[in-house]
Image 1 (tube, rainbow, N blue to C red):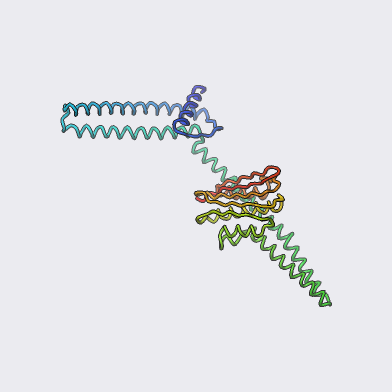
Image 2 (tube, rainbow, N blue to C red):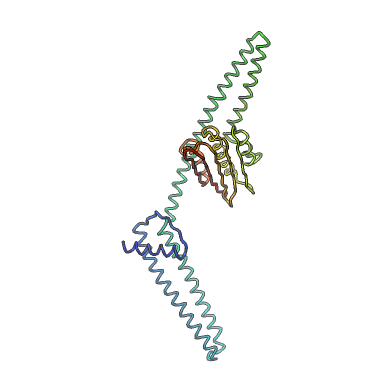
Length: 327
């Protein structure tokens, strides 16, 4: 096994140097895969030697045919047959070399990296994990909405009812008018808070105005200045737009509430078939990627085969980037 692993190591270096292959650094193949690779590689090496030998034999025959034509020792009636046989031999040699090259690359990928079965198992595990994370994120979002409705809007509605009741009991028109003005202001505040809650559930502007205008609404509602750069030339899939909106919205809200930031920059760029979202603030940093908000964003992005990165050292700045495939 030691000799087999050394041979496999030399083969790995050969594939990397001459063919530019890149294999996982920390992947260690099993003994069975190493032995199978060495056996198959020895077999393909012998076949490659036979094919190259036939190619050399064909070249010798071509040289002899050319000399015979030059000396006029070859009859012109035999020339088409000789050319046809040489062409068939050359075609078979080239096809053989191509097939052996493809086989060499395939067995190298199977040995020095995860096999198709291992990749499939890993993909199944990732999908199961992301599905469970999405379910947890949805439940957490429902609990947060219920808490906002119960602790915020419900309490305000109770206060509004009490104001209206006091206004009805007041005999002085001036006092009743003051209470009614206070109740009217309270109703306006309730509508604004209800609008905020509905936007956190799902922004209707995504369906009517698009992602750019929806992000503009996030900037308008934020208590600190938000500079937005939007460079997307074509239409985006709806799930990608929704995920990008929530990444920006959650990141901007966290910056305004927890980071003591005075400015936030948002950049949304479409690079090929990947939508890159970057949100950076100048706050104190220390954002926890395992928190409920950021972990929910990570699950939402992972459900689309995307990647979310959080860079938030102590003292800031906090940079949140997301890459969302649009395929």
